[in-house]
Length: 263
Image 1: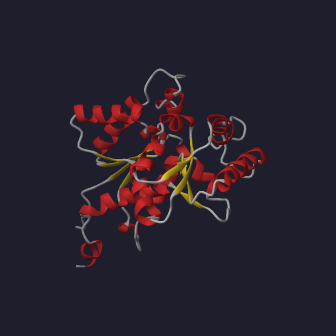
Image 2: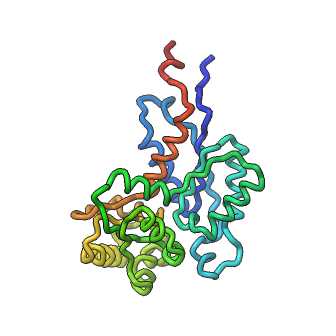
Image 3: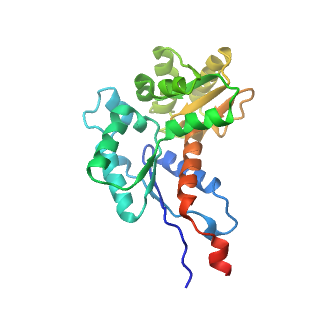
């Protein structure tokens, strides 16, 4: 009887939004060296969008319930199903007002899962792979913007974060994510003229400030930017970096599949 020696199982918390959770799973697949199905890592994706309040709405005081508690319940479901390496497909959920509650709840319940921090992994990746980069542009939700999550982390890693004033952030960057008619959460039609206009305006802002790269600090943003051919600027996808980290952690206790299958 064949048994696969994988002690770690990846758990993905989706639904924030649903397409972003699927994109993270695809990134896990793309970052896993595999020549046959059995080379891939066991992964559980749970997407319960109706259970999790919008993170930015909470951080801006529009919603009272901290989405951290719903996220914890989903982590508990993932752990019960066997997952122990967990990734949240949402940058804003890593803001201290949410993440600290998640970590405290998991500690109190004596959870054994390892929660991978996407923004920290992103900054580590930048520091390791882009040593000559200095000025890093930030495109995020209003929630992530207001908490200074990426700004503070980038400064800790000795980068210079380039961020717009709040009016530009709210009317251009956040609007391309949240607009009910053409925003990415409403539709991932990257050719909508209003969305294209906002994207070009944002890119122009950062190019004028001569950034070395732009962090796409909302997991919806790569869904559109992957389809665009934009020259002269590097885009950093935290979801792809998180996927690399999930694969790295999950593979630590994986036996040689070739040996399992053919010896």
